[in-house]
Amino acid sequence: MEPTIFRFIWKYSLRQQLVILALTVGSFPVLYATLELPKIIINKALAVQADVFVLFGYELTQLQYLLALCVGFLALVLVAGLLKYVLNVYAGIVAERMLRRLR
Image (tube, rainbow, N blue to C red; front, side, top):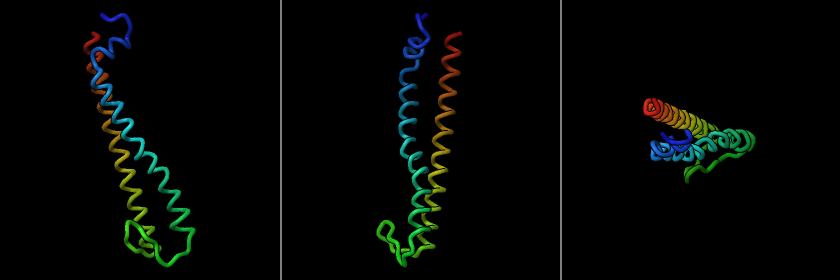
């Protein structure tokens, strides 16, 4: 038996802990984008009165631009939720394995 719980966890689940860390760090850009996109929707799509908006090289009307940003926001929210789900399920699996090994 290891002298501390942290050494025990580190010894028997180092690879799984690194996977959890990678999933967590990988979810940060998606989380940031879900926080930034509503600001873009309010400040650019609704506040600016322009005839043409350019998005990824395509010229869009204001309504098309707003719909594209809203669909993008919905996709980002779904991806963020999926990443959070995968992270929580994997962390639960690792925790159950470590508890079983500890007993």
